[in-house]
Length: 246
Image 1 (cartoon, rainbow, N blue to C red):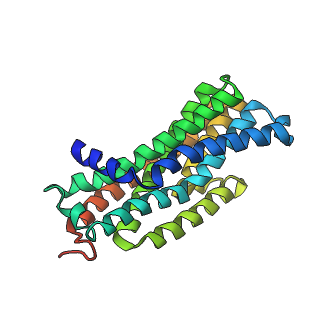
Image 2: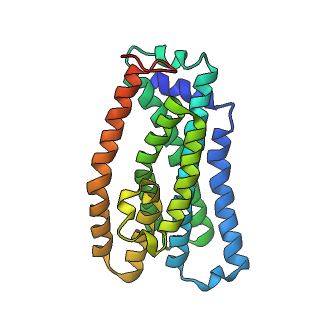
Image 3: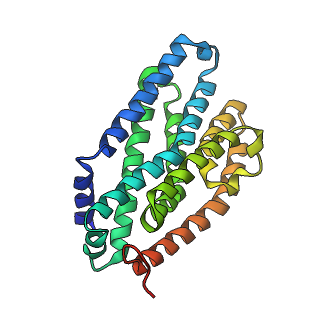
């Protein structure tokens, strides 16, 4: 599987994906810092600023996952209409899981860079909290990356993109009171709501609030993610690059 992972990373070398994973978080961090220095953002507390920083990252993740998984699918479609992917290993599960890992590795790099920019430009005071917020953004995105990869492979990248932008809008709306009590059942809202709630609980001095929300989310998200992963592996085992075998 390690060889498959190295091969997939090499395939991405000549695409825009590595540049996006490196430049986009850096530009986002610099833009946020510029807004902090030149607009009214400076009036807000460090916790409020961190909450906004993490929530906006969470809102951007649904279309980001669609773009990345769409590119991963496009490369395989160009390389023999998915036949190289399907014949690269006797174990289909390895080929699918490699695509998932490659996508998530890029996500981890992007989040790490964005958080590094925060610490360097905004100060190290909330570095630990920012790290945990980034970890929540990563974990809460696993489900979406699986769904978007499945859509890009089994349906088409356009469907994945459409869902990604709709998810971003949904996540933005869910940052308001409209999402209270509902966001647990809306996967695109998971990253922004979890990270935002973490900082809110810190600001209120109420760790119990975050533990309560995290527990409710985990009770739904964990089994749902495992079900989607199992279904994805089963579907991939029967997929022939354009149709499914009996």
